[in-house]
Length: 173
Image (cartoon, rainbow, N blue to C red; front, side, top):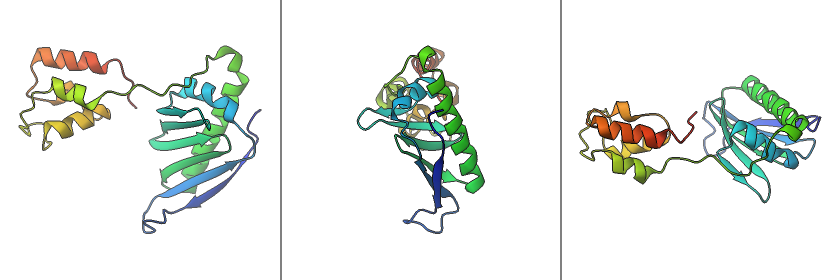
């Protein structure tokens, strides 16, 4: 077992204390830096920074930062949700560390679709038939995984296929 425990701090954002959600920062009892490339390989981090080792994830509908001695989680409903996510991460860190001989470590983040490449495949008519004000806004939502080719009524079948083919190379949560 690599990570034996942590001390968590739950707080509301200082910039907006009336926020209903809370944030959590957990100070880790052990340095998990060496496990981060294995965790990244298994959980598919959105961003990996080598120095100092830091992994950004989207999991459980949250943005999570894991570094050698700290885990930070944003926009939690309550302390119980923080506990659930921290326990899950502790288990995952220990699992990948125990299985590191069978995991190929990765220091690469997920490849993301490029906004301009999506926009090139759209009709650029700003027709609003999709319910959005512009094709640029639609492209941004496609880039984040919230929309797809089928959501644009103006796309020809050929363009839908091209957009679907382009997006097939990416993983969306």
